[in-house]
Image (cartoon, rainbow, N blue to C red):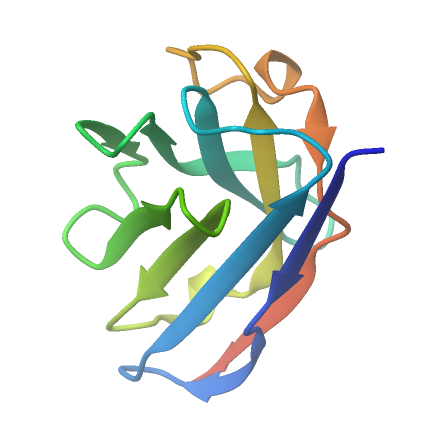
Length: 124
């Protein structure tokens, strides 16, 4: 059974940093894609960042470019999201997503496996 477990969320002040982690079990995602999405109250789930394989290919939403960094440790089947210069508009539930195959798109439907999410709240 595949499980994705996010951690690292919480309350942060604007301008500070948080680091999210997502540990995967039950399937090897080494050669596939892992990504982060977020969903704010009343809004649809949106793409944040994506990393494929060993990390040679990464992709970010325009809203987080230059502030967020996605990385992964395949030996631990874990993906990270370093979030710097946080803004109140970053407040959302952050979800980890994974696929055992290459994913080029930022669509929610491209990822078959999802975590339960971790809340990030940024105060001004």
